[in-house]
Image (cartoon, rainbow over all chains, first blue to last red; front, top):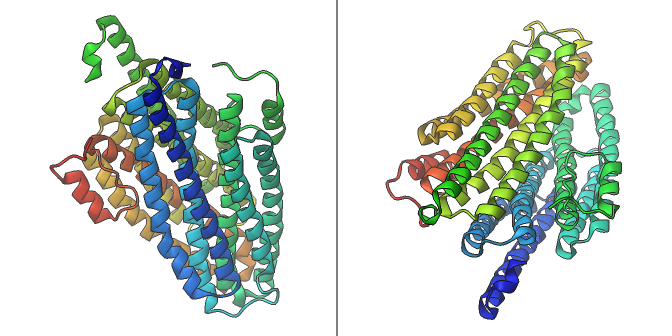
Length: 243
Length: 243
């Protein structure tokens, strides 16, 4: 690797910068994960103050994306990293786009929480949203874990679990559509619930995207747009992709 | 710029590669724009065959994203481009993510077209979807135009028009919710319409994202997550961002 050609001091500084970059992504991820959890809790417990805080915090998520993007550009310009580090940085540019969009979805859930706080609550007290919300927050947590440890097995388990989340989403969604048809007076509430559910489902998709970049990084194989089975084969295969 | 230091033959090859990259992005954009137009036409004219074709074509959009990403990584590794070219390549990595997601949304509209083809048609014959659809297809076209010509004014006009699209979306959406409440038998159809409208609205957002990268490229200023007014100030300002 090119790094061996570099002087010790320069190399040290370079590695430090990569480490700072990695830590910033994890910090952004931690904030985004908290946003998801807080947004779901705000909705389930009709906590408008917490919802407002999530909405306000989204600006912090956005500015972290901008800062990390700039840092990536700087490292590319200054150090001209070779193959594997280059792949790492491109993956980060993609990862933070997904993190930022998870943040947007959390903000949407928080906005629905504000709407719903004024309305009658359903008999199940939003237990279905709580359940789906906890599952996707865990997906975000595990996607970050896969990134932090470059762990292909964790990445694969997130992709598998995202498929389960999609199924739970479909089933809960059908239920709410049935409620709506049975009692049209609940339509406006049901639509807010549907938007929140949809946002949670999309958070799962973004967590899966993040895991696809981890597999790309570790195995050199692009597993976007492939089935779960193909993804497992690619991640477990002995032959890494062509460099 | 570093390029001056390079030999003529090498420089020629490098410029060719950048030009190929740029053309591929435009080709991907052209395909995505056609997908949006076809999906909307399929829905409005209940053309299931056209809808199926859009759904099938999405795989082509996806594979273009993967190919262009790889080409970006190759150019970064081989030529280690300096500041402005580096920014160009990072913008492309982001742009194609948005193009791919516009493709996903077009596919969603096509899926709704398949559902809706079996159902009674509303009195307005989906004139509202046609109108919104034509507007967002034009936004995608203009965003690509802004990218092709690195035109900040066109980029700004897309951002402004996206704000109008959002308003039209809100108004059409409210109308469909009213229909649903007036006649609950139309709920399942209305929900398909709502998903299609939502997908169109998101296409506008992605077109706006693409224009933000153009402004970033030309002006060196990151205008994501800022208001339209701030964006205009940044794009028109005489002082480009610090390098």
